[in-house]
Image (tube, rainbow, N blue to C red; front, side):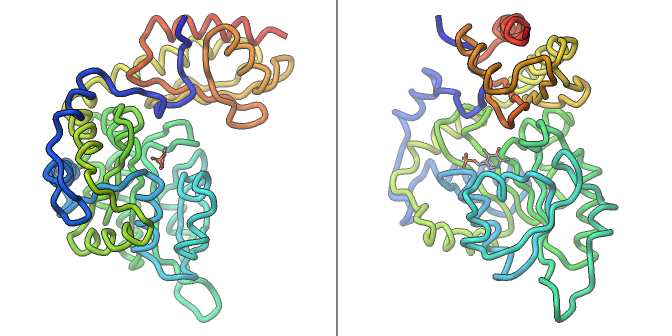
Length: 343
Ligand SMILES: *Cc1c(COP(=O)(O)O)cnc(C)c1O
């Protein structure tokens, strides 16, 4: 039996239709600016996000590191939510390449305009220059929590008044927009730059797109070269991204329904701590309390029964829904986890 894959929405595999789109892609050398499919994807994403220009990059990590590099100088401070991907999961790149330091704000990954205002200080000769505010929407480590457009606008107001730039890591921006029932452009209207991942719940094999002003994207293209991220016939990947944007966005609501189903089924189980009302998108994170086993044990027991979930802490587990898991599989996962939890 094929296991129920809930470890990550990056585990999705290209569908038959996506593979067809890949095989039929018209391509050229994108480093020379001659791949028509990459150009189409960039234009489409710029329009989708209401930005002047966009740039295809191989990964979300590279999109983040390019954005940090282009917005800051070495020694600057970046204000961001607790547990942001760019500082938690990118192998120390933010310090190594952009040379920035960070101040983490807020809880569960999200920060508020008030918390940001309280953390600001006037420039002085002793402390790092505060240069950039960084949001992540939805917030991965925060359990897929979402900033609504009004929250982003409020933060942008504070950032702008202090002369700070604002970037939004939108690896799962389309999940966030789905949860807020608004357009992705509305969610990023107040930020200077943003990015989306094509390889998470959208189901493409690889690729992210960075978007912002024309001048920012020109600098980003140069940074992409520095990082070795210029790909030649990248239309092969861009075609998958275009297919994903055309066919896999409207269905994200199913992933959110499945995540809520999973959360409400798990919430009542003994030893499992989870607030189902905090599940806004496709990520479900829960904690284990004695006498429930620790995360590693639970993950191993579930795996033996054909359900794959991820340990993200000694007693913390993550389950993520996506286009390769359906409602029945989520129901099955609840009963498997129920058994696996018993001491
Ligand atoms: C996955 C992820 C990234 C990085 O994307 P990769 O393509 O895996 O490098 C960046 N930000 C967030 C919020 C993510 O979840």
